[in-house]
Image (cartoon, rainbow, N blue to C red; front, side, top):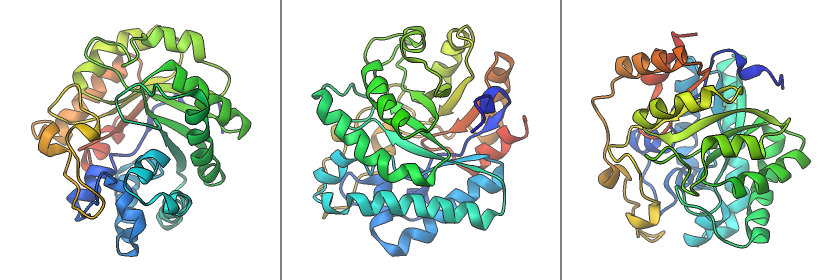
Length: 305
């Protein structure tokens, strides 16, 4: 993987989980997108969702492994399917790439290993074990890893030690709050200065609002590293961890996050494209969508290449 890959404008895919729900996935418990990997009837839905981003202009697709983390699988009493769902997610991404007949890259989504949007305060050896077992399954299928919505430098450091041993580069996706800092209280500058190494391809604001992306773009720009975003379209600017709004058990239908977090229907594909153009002018080269974005948003930002 060319270390300068993200120095030119590159297009990431749209969100997966919310798009699967919009296309008919009925989630179980708090598994969200991982539900689609437990049942063969949803496999084509995952492939089609990947293909929709690719056909819209995405050059990179993420594996559907955001909620296949060990903790979430165990919480839903399907921990015995952990290896299976992570491998299946990778196989479906590879299949989509093959069907597209396009030169695209697959990024291994390696999420925060406990609750999304919150700092993982567990013992280091536990976090390390969680990162290692998921990354080890994903690694053979991907061109690089994407640290997917991490909330602290400690998590980045633990994950990076594992990723380096797997000899893969990484795009770092940090979650940022309204105050411009990570949930850990660290600044973007502190993260880059303390943890950046030769494995880094770039850094992006991950699953954050357009307003936060715009507010922090000047700080990103000063750090001399490729940067950008995967923006969400939640109405709530600081989204809540899943356990705060979804208490469904595995044998129950999971609650759609947008019931609590809302959806910004006013951010049309055209609005999204205009926003991306503004951030590009400030130096961003890595553009993509997260929750509640879809292929139409990707098609607009792909026009900016």
